[in-house]
Length: 143
Image (cartoon, helix red, strand yellow):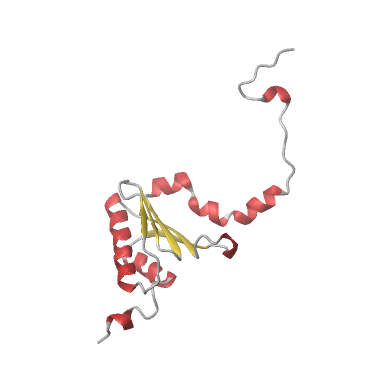
């Protein structure tokens, strides 16, 4: 029989999180490795649920498992959006998980913000377009 210390020997890893999300029937799991220079987190995860109740159940279960496997020195969980119906965010320290309804996920497209980063850097090398002087919103041109 395993003891509590043997169960949490490995700690709460990305593999544990993905397995947990699969077990809880999460939809469209997207895991993004955060570049080290950002020092934000190691992984950024976006996942959908089929109802607000499903989102809440997944988030709370993930927190429960984290607390069970947490080691001394691991950060406390931070939860955002607990009063919303379409989004919850849980910061586990080494990973941040956004639980979203599919409609909300389509609006914010968080995966694109993190995965298209290299394309954004390429866009910086394109010269900026300038608009004609008379194309400034809210300014009347007098001649």
